[in-house]
Length: 204
Image 1 (tube, rainbow, N blue to C red):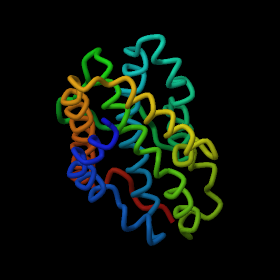
Image 2: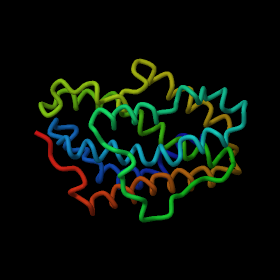
Image 3: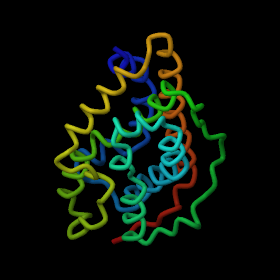
């Protein structure tokens, strides 16, 4: 089914993105606040530009199946930006053309696969951040990671079930391409931020 194929066919993009997203620093509890702000901002920009568009493109029945309103994460990201005093009006513009899927179920679900998959690791990331001395007493600034809380597993299962049921075999390539292009959005934005390493100064 398409979920397993997507995992295989997007593996290279997934690995490329992880190499840019401070995974080692997160896992060894040494992530800096400056780098955390970068992660938040990357996720905010992508969600701000894609989340509502994707939700609005869904057919009504599919939106209900996905419980899409409960999957919107922009509000959590905005809370985090406010906590860390990041002004979303001063963030840099994209220096690349953002991929936005067409109004096609397979393409929309391919893009959502990437955004939902990013959330899948959120609870583990939040656990490591909370174990990091740099983030002592800063749990109120960690709304995005762990946004689903105890519902994380059930929400992923629902998404995968809908994905497998709704994407027809003849549309697999469209779904895969959309997922890879959405990963590419994140990769390009991460590289853009790596070229501007002083966007966020260290906080002590």
